[in-house]
Image (tube, rainbow, N blue to C red; front, top):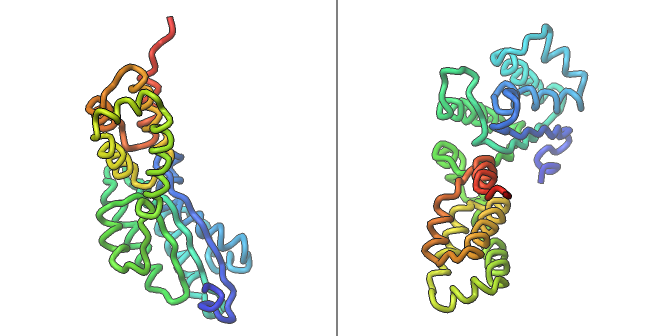
Length: 241
């Protein structure tokens, strides 16, 4: 499909992954722009002189540099395919700014890309109101990973818990276990690692005699952010004496 879209033009693929807990550049639009520029220029070094007649890594300069390269698409017979993951991980350039404002800035940047006939975008991130409003209106341009993985996650949960003798005994007297399965799937939002850690926590509770209501309470107290969940699990470890 990309080759058909590009026709006789060369397709330049540029990638970026935003990560909130990484270095500042890994969560800021400055880092996103640097990454896209690097990916383009490493493939087409002849564009460097057009992008950077002088070097200054401030946000505005990076925007102008990338925009200048994009504006030269027809002159150099180029098409660009940008893949950007972790939209929800973007951070603020200004210490006084907010995540909401940084997400809005990112959306505006991506919208400016999307308006170009020489650019194709593939972006991903956890659900966020601003991203949902701007990017999820057309069903043929949007996939909810949690919908695609729900069946596999359910199979994993059932396999892990159904193989546990204590859980089978609980399930025989309390049919509420299905609600527990559904809650795990809904809360996970398609993240398999979260499911694995949540199920591990539930099995730990079962080992200490938790009933279905106890397990539901345990599940609801688990943080949804993976990094926070790791810390929660570590803090919950009973010290060895």
